[in-house]
Image (tube, rainbow, N blue to C red; front, side, top):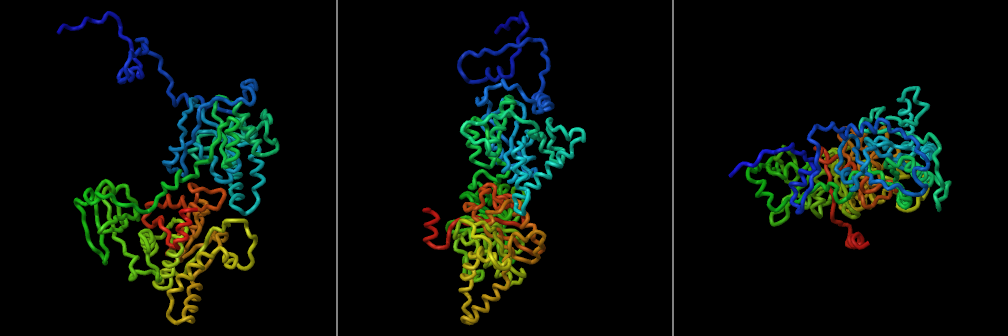
Length: 567
C-alpha cells in the first residue's frame, strides 16, 4: 500500500469540544471550529474570574433607567448550598436548582426577619454568597428583643452577632458600611461572602394592590429595588413565611425557604434503626461466618459488602421459618458482629408485666433495658406503645434492679388547640394536665399488681408515684441529673437547640429516652425535617451508646388503628 503524500501546508487545531463532537455517534457532517496554529494567549481561569468579580462587589447603585419599574428581570435560576456546623449534608445537593446561573457573581440573599428568629446563625450559612438586611428587618428584630422566649433569645443573639461584625471592622470603616462587612471576620470561615445593610433610601415605588405600610410589602419593595439596581446579580428573598414567598413569585421575584435547618427533605428517608436482611444474605455473607455463645447470648461474625453500610446498634431481622432478630454489636470494615436479641415477647421475659407485641417493640425494649445504652429515641404514630414501654422499663430498672434512683418525666407544652391560660399550683401541679398520657399508662401498669388486694395496689401505686418526678422544661437549664431515667415526651415539638439543652443535662449513670411522632408537630415554626427529634435521630445514628427504633404498628385498639389509617 503506497504511503500518503506529505502535507503542503500547516495543520489546523481543533478545540476540545470539536474533538468530542467528532467522536459522537450522531450522523451528519461535523464542522469543527478552526484555530490559528500560533500559540494563543492564556485565558483567565474561572476561579480567577470569580475572584476578580468578587473583589469589587460593593452594592453600587445603577441608573434608574436601567429597567422600567415593574418589569421582572430575566435571570437564570438560583440555588443555595451549604453545610451546618461543618458537616456535609446530602440533602443540600438535592436543593440545587436544575437551572444553573450563567453569572459568576455571588448571589444576594435578602433575609426576612423570621429567618433570623428561627436560626440566629443563618447569617453565616450562605457560603460565598452575600447577605442583605433591609432596614425593616432590623426594626422588627428590635421589636422582639425583650422577653424570655426562645424567639427573644435568638433575636438578642443576632444583635450580638451584628455588633461583633461591625466591631471587627477597622475603626475608620465602621461609619461607612456600603462596601459590606466580611462575614468571616468573627471566625466563620465557611462564610466567605459579605453582609450589607440598607444604608441609603432605595427608589421603592408602591406595589399595586399591596398596602405600603405592611412590613412584608416593604421588604418585597426592597427586593424589587435591589433587582433593578443590580440586574447582573441574582437577588433572592429568603423567608420562612410561605405567603410572602408566594407574593414574591407572583411579582416576578425570586424567593425560597430557608433550608439549612432541614436535616432531611423527606421524612421517609429518616433512619429507622432497623433493616430487613436480604434473602441471599447468608449466601453472600456466611462463607467464613463465626458463631459462639457468651453468657447465654448467641453471637455471629459475618463478612460481606453489606456490613460496611450498617450502623452500630442497628437492628437486623429475618422473617420466615427460622426468624432472626439481632443487633449490630461491632463493625470493622467489611466485618460485622451480630448479637441475637432476648425475646421480650415471651412472658418469662416480661418487663413490669409488659411483653412486646411486635418486632419493633422487642427492639425498643432491648435498647431500654440495656445499661450500656445511654440515649434512646423512639418514633412512632399514636398507639404504638412508646410511653408504655419507656415507663415499664424505667420502673423495672428503678424499683427492681435499682439501676436508677428515680424517673424524671418532662414534655413540650405545646397545645393542640387554644391555650387555656395560666395554671395554678406548684411546678408539678402545673405540669399535671400535660401528663395525662403518663397517668393512663400508669393505670395499665398498676393492673398487674394484684397481690395484697386494694390496700396492696394502693401502697404500690404510692411507691411508684414517689419515684416518678414531673418537671418542666423551663427550669432545666443548669441542672445535672445523676443516675436518673429521663423521659422526654412529645419531643417532635422541640427545636434542635432545645434538644441539646435537655440532653446535656444528663450526668453519670443517666439514661435519656426521647419519644415523639414527627407527623404530629404542633409548633408553627417546625417541620418534619427541622424538628429537634429528627435532628437528634440523625446525629446520634451509629453512636455506640445510643440507639433508635421507629415503631410501625399500633397496638392501642382496633378503633385507634382504623382512625390512624382512615382519617
